[in-house]
Amino acid sequence: MNTGLNGKTAIVTGATQGIGKAIALALANEGVRLILCARTEEQLQQTETEIKDRFHTEVTFVKANLTRTNDIKRVVTKAISKYKRVDILVNNAGGAHIGGIFEITDEIFEAHIHLKLLGYIRFAREVIPYMRQQGGGRIINVIGTAGKEPKPTLMLPGITNGALLNFTKSLALELAKDNITVNAVNPGTTDTPLTEQTIGTLASLQNVTPDEMRQMLKSDNPFGRLVRSEEVASAVVFLASEAANFISGISMNVDGGTTRGTT
Image (tube, rainbow, N blue to C red; front, top):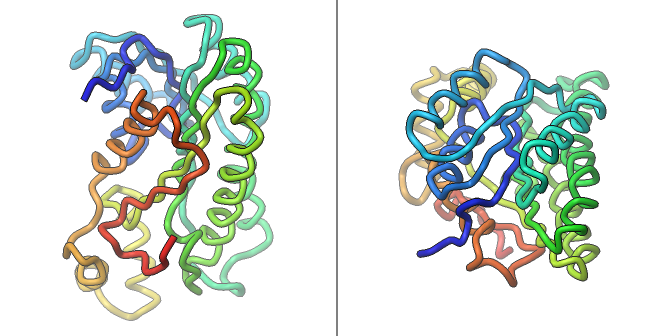
């Protein structure tokens, strides 16, 4: 499929490992010019070098903490100064915290909400004026299936993810007149370094070994395995492509059918 992405410009947040890095590599493979951002400069440099070595596309990075509005502004300013436009925003930064209401303090709630929920909202707010000026764009929010299936141990990501699903739909309706599509990709349990930490925490809560916990998660998936980062990245590439010109406001699960709901 000709994606029509060659020469487009994309900002990818949380771009140095796991799903974010897979998305950056997949977009680079399509000839997209990239602005990468994350909190660790060394990992950003490594990702930039890898992309330059493997693909013939432009790439730069900005070290940024997405809980800080000024850092978000710096990323967008860098993209505009270097490429003069932003065609695609991939909101991906964030993390998971395991526990129920008594394990999650106010401070943890606030930190997670500032990073993922407000981070996504603030990034969208910064790029929308430029997308309007250039006649359109794509905003793709990497969220998660916890927003659709509440679970006691995933209360915090469930709350933020649920809010982001609502935000995605609302923003899609608001921006349709501007030719800006807004969609969500919801990874199931994905085989990443962050998931390894989550598996360890879940194993401790359920008094099993991490290997046993991993096997339980695999068994819960109809395909009998975890999601691969590259599979999430493929969904993002599709939603960014010309093939998805008239798709907006949707929430695409990439979970092998694990989520039991009908939507």
